[in-house]
Image (cartoon, rainbow, N blue to C red; front, side, top):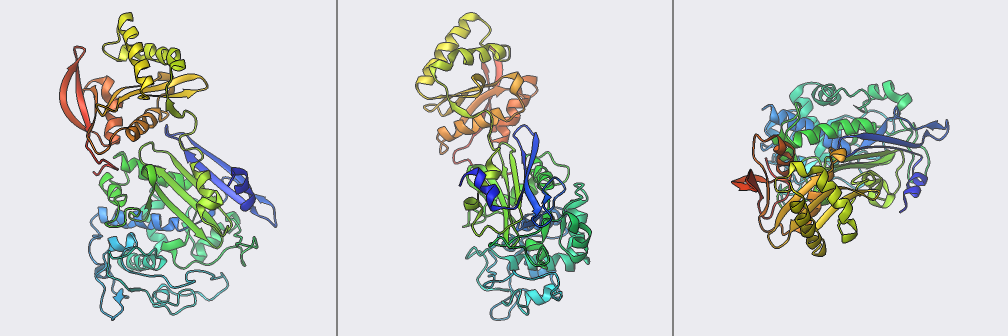
Amino acid sequence: MEYGNVREIFPGIGCAWTEAGGKATAEYYGVADLESNTPVNSETIFPACSISKFITAICVMKLHEQGVIDIDRPVNHYLQQWKLRTLDGSESNASIRSVLCHTAGIIDGDDGFYGLRRNDPEISLVDILEGKTAYNSRPVRAEKPQGEAFEYSDAGYCVLQQMLQEMMQKPFDKIVRDILFDPLGLHSTFFATPGNMACFENRMATGYDEEGLPIPGRFPAVPDLAASGLWSTPEELLIIAREFMKAYDGRSGFLKQKTVREMVKPAEKFSWTGLGLFIGDHDTLISQGWGENGQCILKMHCRTGEIGAVMTNRNPGVDQQASGVERLADRNFCEGEQVSFGNPDDIESWMNLVRHVSWNFPGLETEKALDEHRQTVLKFMGKKQALCTKKDEEITGVLLFSRNRNMICCLAVSPEYRREGIASKLLEKALDELDRNRDITVSTFREGDEKGVAPRSLYRKFGFCEGELTVEFDYPNQVFVLKGNGSIPSA
């Protein structure tokens, strides 16, 4: 589907991206309400649908981090007013972890969690859990042993909502505001209780169904808040995602690195699911939602730090890939300088960059050394072992690697283009070209050398560990090693 068609499908779209270097941008299209022709802008609040589960999982994990709960204990350990039972009526031993990653054996009913209107009588969470309403007519039970099957479940997150409300003795929306929204300074993100909707109604995008007709009452009632009751803006989703990625790198004052690494660890037997989010290709993390009044997606790239958030106000009838929403979220991923193999026509621009940074590389101090390096680069180009990025025709970053030795040989970025994620893009491409079943090595500056601050941080980010101390060109270096079969590194 072409990008232009995305804007034809949805009345309104809000997008926000964070580039590898940290720069954030946002774009808005269409209208929040067709009848009034209200344009979408930075103040428009969209339904975040099942991105709610990611938010709920963060809150659960924050309490786990604080020692308030243990996610490996049965969820029933923290439930008193209502219990999760098996089909024979006994208490389930399903853990909080299994509920978070949809492997607790809880199965949603057909056509459940859909169609409730704002003027319908309010229904309680316990009635939903007991299957006593048309909104969910299937009693919530652990119908399979935990860990046996993946069953995507809104009902499971209703169990988590009940657990949190019982433990904290306050409404779910206030729990999340205290744990997450207030500490991050979010003022346009909330869970859709009747009171919250009344406060924000003039900014909330009218929802449209698959036929393009407005939802009666403009948007549905969603009592299963933890599963799908979140409303937000793309820019505030970025704030949450940026903090999450900072924690992934160990730079957050809000979440511990260990907590986030636990969330992104693949579930046993089901490698595509973590805790409250999904694990995509190329080290991406995905949270997405699709309801009767909108579709959205939040994508985070572990290595580059790039983030894309797209929110809309219509049910398109097809998934995010088919509707173009995912493509729109990916639009700014690795935009600008693209990684390609260098060729001999690039040699002059390549060497201009090398000369520009040669002071930072022992062994390149003389014209003779630079001439020898030029011949080396040409040989690597001939073997397709030379990578570069360009802006227009100017080379902005270079990397040499050896397939035979399974190593990174040289990596440099023009000073004018640093902090834009170029080094991460080059390294990621090189790792794709090398044998990940074998150890991959790279030599860089030692701890305490100011030249080594950036490269050592980069290699650690990609999972490399410190190796032996060496001396190259009479300069003290250290080998970094990425162990074979490496993936997203664990804490």
